[in-house]
Image (tube, rainbow, N blue to C red; front, side):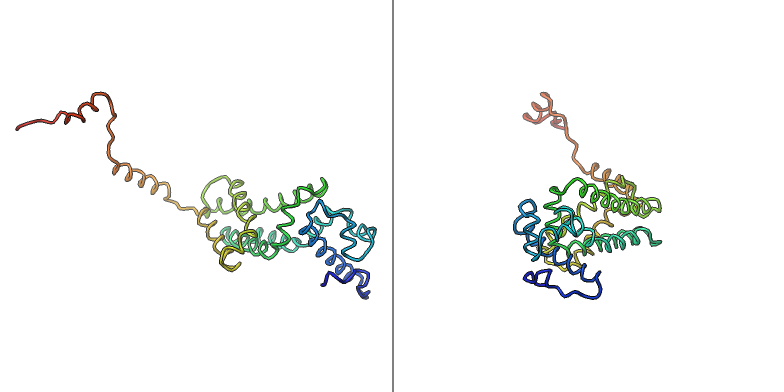
Length: 249
């Protein structure tokens, strides 16, 4: 929808909820444009109201402040995504299948919402305490779902034993930057999602004889390594003069 259309000129639909949704969308789009161009701190509620073609009190009717506006946008953008992720995390599929799908969906979601996420992650430190607390609670909930899948995979013998919390944080840390580098990867979002999914599953996969093979490889490598003599004063002198080689016989 064009930024030139003031909210007050929107046709009053018979469905009040639909009009309210249209209003929120216009506010979101124009606020994001201002946050992107001016920065979160430099953008005032008056700037947002002016961009939307309404008075500042009209904006306050929907949002208590800028933090609440961006927090609400985050909730709207992620609501369906989080519902899908929770349902997937609790599904009866094996853990590897669920984790792959979680990674795939998170990757595709992050790439699709790239513009919003760049602004959101850049500006979230400016949020008021109430908004930060609400967002942190949502994030801890999502982390718990991913960790739960990892723990179930370990219990079932699908994933190797390791600290599930560290594994979860490592996975989500990897995915948290995908929206930044995806445009430069030279691959489609689907290919990127598949590559990341397989990368994580390969790293977590339980290999029953991995320890035995690693020990054997270490022993093999050690046996090939040349024996090193300790370089004492005596053997340095021997090396310099040909050592204690037998002469004759």
